[in-house]
Image (cartoon, rainbow, N blue to C red; front, top):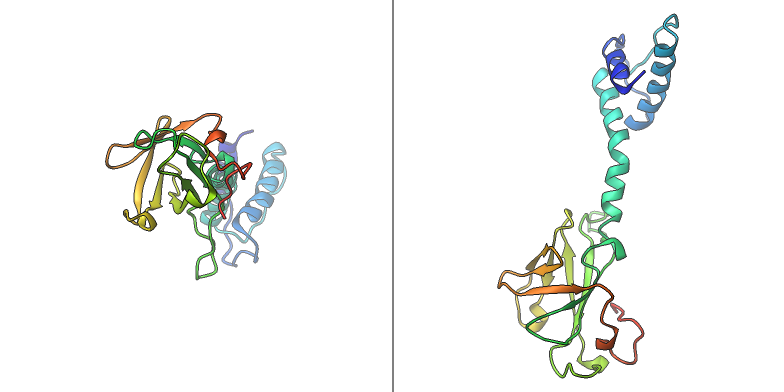
Length: 202
């Protein structure tokens, strides 16, 4: 008894013209797979009756299989699970704070949630031989690609491009000009303002 035998059984189903009852393809696939399993284990049992089309049943089966993977993909791109969350070394500003925190995806005007998690970026550009004052920390926003492999940062508040694309490369973020922010495994707490235990995005 295997998935292959279930799919072969699906191909032998008698199809009825009535439409599927108002429930999801995945839920309908679960009930039909259970019926097919009984039929496969008990050859003398009558074939299951269904109002679904073969295409709908097979589509529901595919959705059932794909759902866990899709859920994992989304969770892997936010919070500490995101490869971009952390603190970095910037060779153009040695010893200066570079922090990225990836949060949830925002709601769109349509009422649906975006597929691109948002990021809060913070840093300091000068006097980095000591802990910075909170007032000297600049803050930017960014958007992580759905693939989780790149991040677009809005540097316009600092006079830079609005959507500077950074691509994850090995151990850090590579920018178009060749500069690379290298991720520091345990963070850089000594570069944060003394008044903050952690650097918040607000």
